[in-house]
Length: 68
Image 1 (cartoon, helix red, strand yellow):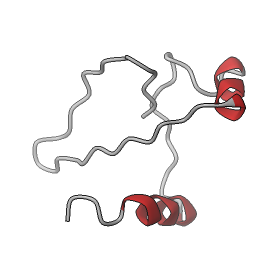
Image 2 (cartoon, one colour):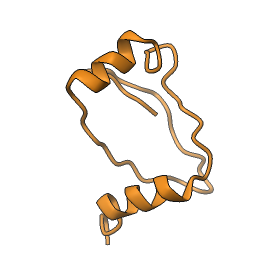
Image 3 (tube, helix red, strand yellow):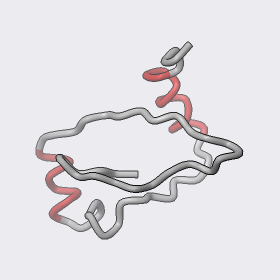
Image 4 (cartoon, helix red, strand yellow):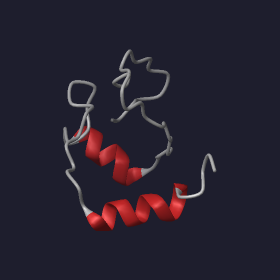
């Protein structure tokens, strides 16, 4: 899920499974171009990335020890 600066959301997890929240901030020309090009927008904030081992590995390398 992509949240824009200052934006509130009302998403919540399933009671049975829950979830953890982690935030990564982005700024700069690349992210600005993604917004300008419409890849990221307030109308398209939930991105279906599927189960991508490389993405999971990158995420765990950054957040793997959070909350433990």
